[in-house]
Length: 177
Image 1 (cartoon, helix red, strand yellow):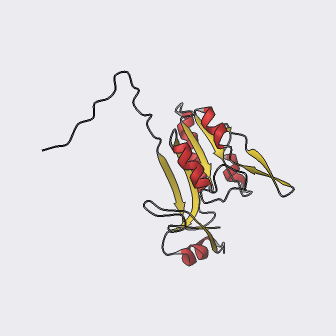
Image 2: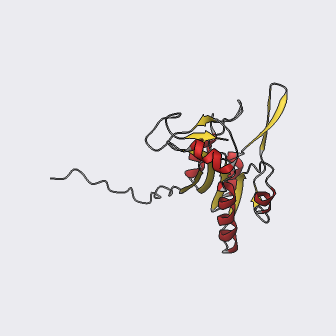
Image 3: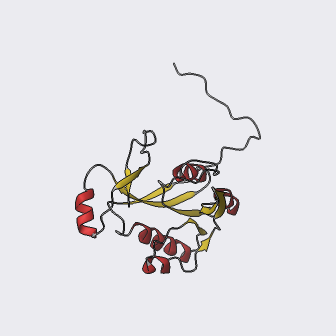
């Protein structure tokens, strides 16, 4: 015997679909996560998909910066904190723009006090309610950071965490770089 079946209320709109999240992972900084994300964004743009850059951190890499040509950038939000002005991702502006895809770099970033949310991954959750979000992070999942550092020539310690599915903040992958 089955339980009651819910009947939709006449005239009620169905809930809006949630966006998808595509994550570009790599074991170290400089292995091409942002480059690949931007390369795919350019291909989608050429096919007529409305793509915006919600947040991009170039790290001075000219070849990666070149991949942003002809992509629309959402201006960052300026926030004053302890006498200095910082730029953060402008989540409300991204939501207002209503693009098909929003690109977000640096998922494990800790936002400046004064932002609506503590972590950028929390902003991405808010964006995902409406968007397909492409994002990247320098991540190591359980092993391999020393080998990756040796291959990339970059040596950086892990210092930021972000959750994995089913986990809590700080229990999942660690950001390196």
